[in-house]
Image (tube, rainbow, N blue to C red; front, side):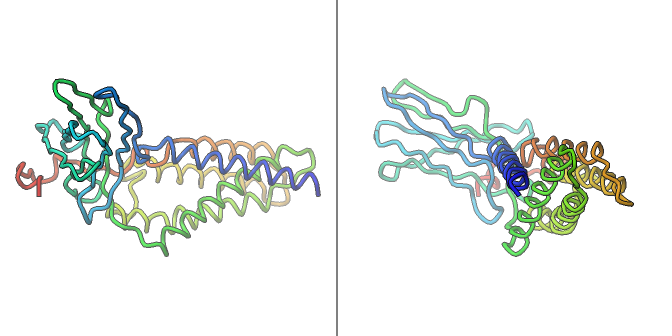
Length: 274
């Protein structure tokens, strides 16, 4: 009993750590930092994901009324001319917005603060924000739950495979079933709601989230196949667990769905500002 507890504890810690790493290292996690201007430190948080239903707000809290700011932005990835939008002061905050884009459309942008002749810019390299459709909670929550369980069972199977007398069979099957439900049943629905397509991985594209799921499922198909007939197949199970940890260590939404602007009708600067 004590051994079982510690195996589950280890699996939970590793799984939660992997989830936190994915989220915080991913390209949709807000860009945070500080700049110095006028002898004061100004903290900035720039969002890198927004819905297609509204413009994306950009807000900077700067009590010093002598500080002004502007957003420099353009579609990403393009060589479009940079657009400039002035932030308007509302009390202690400077506010503006980026124009909404179609699903999977991206903009790159920076905030430039000025006080007299002094100027500060954040971030040093433009932040990239991606627009997405709203995903209903009845799809998103089960998807997240199933993927979490898949990672948990996969890690638990790997821990069990390391035990001299461990039996990873039921955990391997649970991992495969969770990934099939979360990644191949609910995952495409999430992708469709958010970006307008059911599947953007191989063979249709290089969306890393879809391809990570595909690789994990293939690894566990091989693992459960080698477990047939009561075999222990410790090496194969451990390999599948390592593959799962490896692919899910890749930041969430990296190489995600992205509009090919060359295939989208060019819009004028006035239209972009709407």
